Length: 607
Image (cartoon, rainbow, N blue to C red):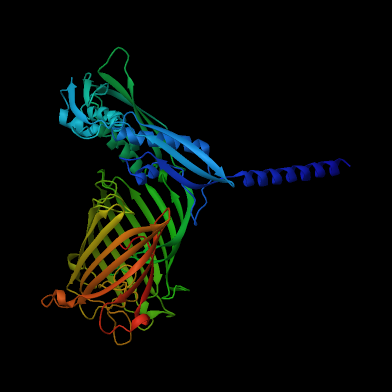
């Protein structure tokens, strides 16, 4: 009887919970329309972009939340104030019809005030020009107190670069027909570091952290050195957090102690990842979109040091031309040892042992895949968040096809770099990127092959109108000393065709041999131009043209050799990378109509 009562109570509670959820769901209201009243000098598109509330579309239903609407009204008022409308007011109201919400924002803009003059007093270390630039004060432009108040902390940080840890900045504005601003600066004394303390080391030796510290006791407190210390500590790969805090010294206003607080990652862990992404499958080819996954075991603190060890198993494969099944699989295993220090000098270094088996594009279905194993010694130096230069030595051994078991030994010195001056790594609108790679195989290093490979490139991005971007890429590569007797097992030569190079041709098949298999060459020129633009929701579009050539002659190169393709594409903006579906056709007389169109699926923009 007792059990039945308990059971009945559970059923009753479940029924009540179900109907409560149903009633709550039925009470949800969606945003039907949004109307702006009174906006004359600020564009409605700018107002809508400042709001979190959005109206419903055929693709998404936007639930109405009155709390968010109130915050949106504050955001819109802040937008107006930042454009010089200091007396602006925003009132929100709603009208509900058949469970749908119609939103109205009534805006009273008022007068727009402009900045007349800026007077700065008390500054000696930093110039007026620098302070005005940080606060974004521009005479005869709309007065923007929002940005100025937000950037006051940046002025203090600028003073910290000169050891002025206790500076203060007071801004006063006098409003008449225009605005006159007075800034009073108190720089404070020069501050020096007395000593430092480290917390959170756990079982790690303290010398592993002290060697990353860029300052010493007695040094002037400089934010640049503090930030460098944080960055170097995090680059060890051992710590998930590094905080550095100055602590006042009793009885002194010119010295501080520095507290370094650390939080370590879990030292040993398993991880896995996978998906559809650009894969560096062949060396002479741009990364090819494919499916891949890996399982990794990592020890971030080998033998209680900052040496990272990882062991990975990797499986990758390319999709067939109709994207229905997996072809040309690659299986690999590697072990990495990495540290920021090498031979008692701070040289970020990685040692990798690797083994791979893969099937070449022309050997699909072979019972004897190509095997590759070897050793890599790499040093990676970062100049900023994305720019770097990497140098390394590679030793690798190849075992060829079933009917060609000749072993190939390659010893290579390689240098590659990236200078990234674009505004976004995934969705660039402005800026440029320079890429370069130079490698020497053989020579004084020995081995069975001897050649030099150079590959240079430039990407340029120009925002031509709002969210419309013109993007261009130019790549030129050369190989010196390549012998015709060399078997191009790993596609060391240059190839074109596919979703990452010339989209009007199948993967690697811009140039083919008598058997219809990819045929590479020692010189490659590739040009890509495209216009990227939004459509609606998270969909975007592309119009593009690609061109290039492959040749074996250094003397007979000309623009007339370039073959072109053109087409259009659709992009889906996911939280990680944009996905592309491109439709392209070669722009030559031999094209056969609709059957010559190529459909290319890609992950991320082509460049």
